[in-house]
Structures are given as C-alpha cells and as structure tokens.
Image 1 (tube, rainbow, N blue to C red):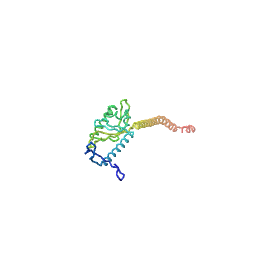
Image 2 (image 1 turned 135 degrees about the vertical axis):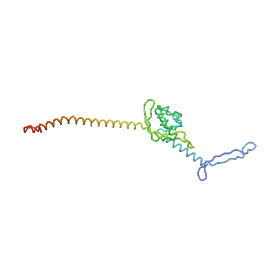
Image 3 (image 1 turned 90 degrees about the vertical axis):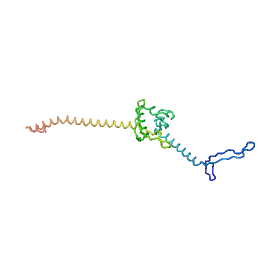
Image 4 (image 1 turned 120 degrees about the horizontal axis):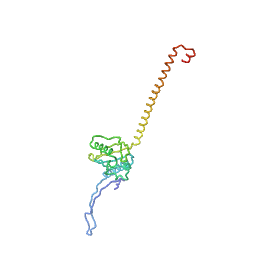
Amino acid sequence: MRTKDGGWRWIQARGKVVERAGDGSPIRVAGTHLDVTERKQVEQALTRLHYMLDNLIESVPDHVYFKDRAGRFIQVNRAMVKLFGASDPADLIGKSDFDFFTAEHAKQAYADEQDLLEGRQLIVSKEEKETWPDEHQSWVQTTKLPLRDDSGAIIGTFGISLDITERKRMEQALRTAKEAAEAASRAKTEFLANMSHEIRTPLNGVIGMTGLLLDTELSTDQRDYAE
C-alpha cells in the first residue's frame, strides 16, 4: 500500500464474509490488516545478500565448495564443475573426493576435514598435491573452514582452492636450473683446481732445475737464456 506521504508499506490482509443477504450476496465482511513492512524489508535484504554472494561464488575463478560431515558435496560453484569435467553443479552433489581423485589425495583431504570438524586444526592457505586417476598431478592452495547451522553446530565444511599448478612447475624449473648451475660451478672449480695442479707440477720441476742450472758456471749468453 502507498501512504499519503508517498512511501510504501507492506500489509498482510485477512478477511471473510460474515453476513450475507437472502440471495447469498455478501453485505458485510470482517478482517485484519497487519503491517509486515519490517519483515519484508528484512526478506528483501536477505534476498539481495544471497544474490550478491551467489554472484561472488560463481564469478571467482577459484574452486568453491560446501560439504556435509561425510565429505559429500552439497554445493559447488561453476569453477568446480569445470574442474571435474561435469556439465551441471547437480552432477557433483552427493559425491566426494573419492569419486574424482585417487585414494592418495582423497584420503588425506578427508582426514584433514575430519580434523577440522573435531576442532583439531585449522586449514589456511595449505598447499595440496592433487593426484588424478589418469596419473596427472595438480597443485592447489586451499583454505577450509567449518560450516555451521543457525544454532552454531558444525554440520560440515566449506572451502576455497586456488590452482597453483603453473607456479609449482615454475618453482621446480627454477630449482632444477639452480641445481644445474651449482653443479656447473662445482665442475668448473674442480676443473680449475685439477688444471692448476697439473700445470704447477711440471712448472715447479722446470723452475727448480733452472735454478740449479743458474748456480753453475755459465757463459753470458747461457745465463741470459736460463734467466
């Protein structure tokens, strides 16, 4: 309803016919009007909040997911759908890491989540290696937190994972290059040390014998040549 001052109010109306004429037509009704503007404003605010959160979750390139206490997916974003090669988020609901990864990764992820549910650890920016059935590997930086209901009870987990596979490959390439450079430096040092020894030994002999020669009687030309 629009008020005289130009504002709007939400009214919940209830009514019914309480008196009818002889021919059955209504002649008197009774009912109530309840102002529910505040409740509607809260509902609209929650709707806007949900809309913004949904847009955020669906827009980020990171993998966002919610799981129950058994580790089964109850909500995922589009990035997760793409990761697992599915066509719709519904294809992932009710499934777990064991349906997509090898036991090596799935068991570790499940154990971490159980520790999180029991309050034994927090998982913040943890680097995880993901192993897939086709034997390829990927790396993610993941943060997982407990999922609570309205009463505060933990009913599952939720998390966000950033794919850092390319970064890990670059780090490995840098480590390999560094190790190769260090190996080359060691080889050069060893080579120079060996060459120095191999050159110094005969030179010492030449210089020593020349010194002995200079201690003998020599002609002027012979001494000049020896020196």
